[in-house]
Length: 319
Ligand SMILES: [Fe+2]
Ligand SMILES: [Fe+2]
Image (cartoon, rainbow, N blue to C red):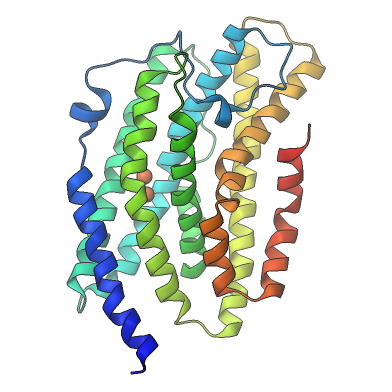
């Protein structure tokens, strides 16, 4: 074993151990810490402006913008419940490599899995609470087990890359929510806070597992994994296109205004931009994600990914 290998084998368990220590220290309970007997206040926004991105819809009243932020919050809860389905399955799968051997790594991944199961439960409860307070007609289009089946059919490297990106953007979403905005729902602020606390450990573990998986691949297998990652991002984008159309239709049906066809199209476009920002671009632009991805792939593979992302990035930054 050379010096570099020795450093990795010594450092890796200590990073797993650190996540266990942090996970125990910040462990929270859905009822006692997050919900605390509160209900949603529908006179407040659910998602912060930096995520909801509704400033281009200048023809909407403030109550209608608030309603759109609430619809986005409902979709946020459902989409997180969806991605956590495949994330948890993949974590359990890669944990198999640690069944025998590094029991600290195994414990860290078992805790990760337990936390994602709790998060899914939290988001299911939030969906029920929001459904009770909003008019009938909201639809969450994608089906979590069907999506997870598709995602888990791709290479482990690509699923861990997508997962690392998701866990990193939850940290950015938390930062967006901490501004002193009195028009933001206190319960939603706490959802961002408590979710971020546990996701911080997950992002570290994803990266450790992603790099461990990367070391197993031949250059050809890694090139295929890059193709898989591009296809996974495409699948995420297809989900965002379907859901933004469904959310725009729901808003048009229940909002306070009768919208012209042109303004209905603008609402739909603004939702797609917001969702692409929330679930793709805010993660891709996290410097740490770019640094890790860049350390694993060739410049040509980086160029393939950049080309695939270009239309989404252009759409999100267009006015
Ligand atoms: Fe989570
Ligand atoms: Fe997570």
